[in-house]
Figure 1 (cartoon, one colour):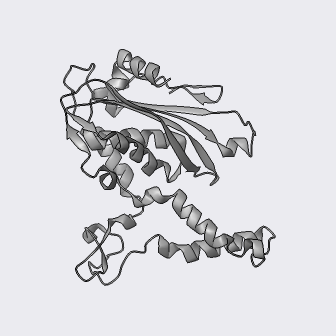
Figure 2: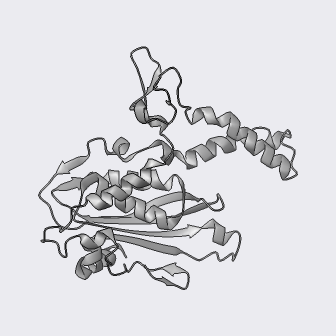
Figure 3: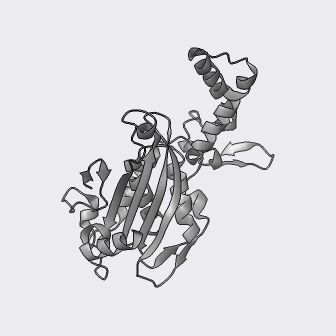
Length: 273
């Protein structure tokens, strides 16, 4: 990716020998020289340290919540099931207390009428803004991967995206366009938007968000190639710092033939403009 006047260009850099995508096939019809497993490995490693999802909790026969795969759960050090990981709802009182302390430190009176319920509202809002921590790709796929003999470009463009900057905890938003070349599998179109939602609803930087979306598509259907372009407006630039209200940031990730084949990349970038 190139950066010109504060914008990250969608033109992908040439593949290098250190890039996992460089080992992929050189064209649509060619067999991939190296399976997509290396890129899938990147995605799995990226997910290892994520907060354990409360959506991975299920009810047992007695109606109690227990953790699937508890042998890998950080809450089950002794392999016992008599203690449960907290749900995100359980976090509201502690988060509200933090917001109450913040208001006080700012010189406000948290007990006045206008602010009395603000800490709890802010806590619930923050949990909503970061609800992507509660979801995994498997959660949203729900069987929406279909065997299909289709090897032409599939694009879902202008997906609305809202996220929270991890550097200043202020919003950034924009649009995401995703394209892929199927390898005997296609993805339900709404699932592409749901993948964007999973990763955008976390504390993020736009560069990482772009790559995570691409790697998630790889994990879901192992396509021949994936391209993702994100254009975002960041409140950390609009409300503070340089305060440039019309600035936009564009980032891209190209994997597989989107990275190696200029014609495929050009077709994708032309169609998403």
